[in-house]
Length: 512
Ligand code: C2E
Ligand code: MG
Ligand code: MG
Image (cartoon, rainbow, N blue to C red; front, side, top):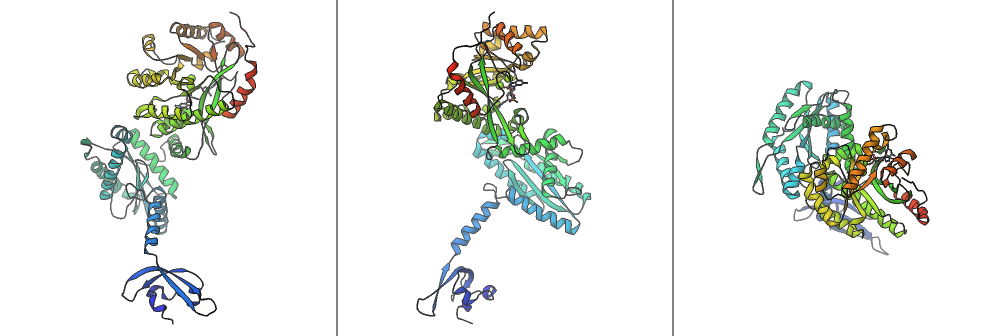
């Protein structure tokens, strides 16, 4: 035994091998002569031309602390200090394995704050963070011993606890009621009294639910049902709860990651001059390329995004993407006159959105006048709310179009007040145009209405030459639809612009 051995702490001493320590560096716990116990890296190096070895002890207390900090941060949420999603799942998995071994069950509570978005929008993000902290403190205080609480995402929390069997449902219901009452106590944020309520979904690991993914998903579905019944309540998972709800939830959680995974793309549908067939612009149409699911249309995921803050991120992403594509077309010498972007007015619920969009355009050196913002007729009907936003967008120089015109109930009087340049005839009228006399009247009426108001009219969903000719005869100058091109990638659109450029004089003429 060397003198070195006596420096190594008792627990580590058996591992210490002098010959090995002379050639490789390893970490040990050492005890100094003054009695201090600390972690140290011991490195041995042979002195040249001799059999002697010098051992260097390096105090690694700081390094160990940093390593612990890093591993803590990787497993915990920085704001609430609760286990994060990954760590929570990991702990849940261990608890499930234990329960299976002991023939007991695990109960999972999925907790989601009701209308949390409003807190963020009204009081700002730091107040929102504070609210989440308070919430997590209350949850932690209320949950029984043995329960593990985690923060899964934004305003979503979860807790699991071991239970002896399904007969514990009553206990869980009572616990949920207690938690709901406790977290809904008022607190103050910036001198304002705030009440938060939660929706709680509960699932048990009873057969066939035997893994973390199914358990979390089931509790999430139950939470969704609690939310549907107005929030501030709890619901137990029941296999009868609809498959559709499951699918929505799965999509919603995947949508969150679509942006970072670069799964979103914008396709462009050419906007053409109905007489000449020349491409004058494009409409940007969003697609979600979810691996394994193919392209998911916006009608399925925009409503999901609108239920959360995601719509803001997605909306800004679209602006950034379109501006970058426009800049690329311009570099290729083929910039179209205009590009249309669809907007959900919910995107503007957050202060500063208009300014941020203006900033994005500036970054790419794109003039607002080449961008046309499409807003659906039904959204415009909430003009009270959308008015100021539209005014400020128009003031920046954006063109504004009413999308799906004819499907809502906008009055002429309302139309006159709005800063609008374009009406887009809904494709349903165009589709029936050539087979149904009434619809021919309808499209003609819309075209005339547009002309009277000094607006441009675009017909959507043109699929046949017949439709194109009729619309042109009615005085509609612009259109889009599969006849001229289905939505295509930015690259394909650029190729189309480049090849079309030389033949700018109109090639086809219709006479009235
Ligand atoms: P929209 O603005 O009325 O878009 C026109 C829709 O008609 C597009 O569907 C387009 O692919 C489809 N279409 C084009 N030509 C034809 C045709 O000849 N025949 C038929 N049957 N359909 C045609 P899509 O891409 O599924 O978009 C659906 C809606 O989703 C859009 O309706 C728009 O309101 C919304 N949307 C699309 N992109 C975005 C976006 O970036 N943000 C927001 N908020 N909404 C978007
Ligand atoms: Mg549109
Ligand atoms: Mg439309």
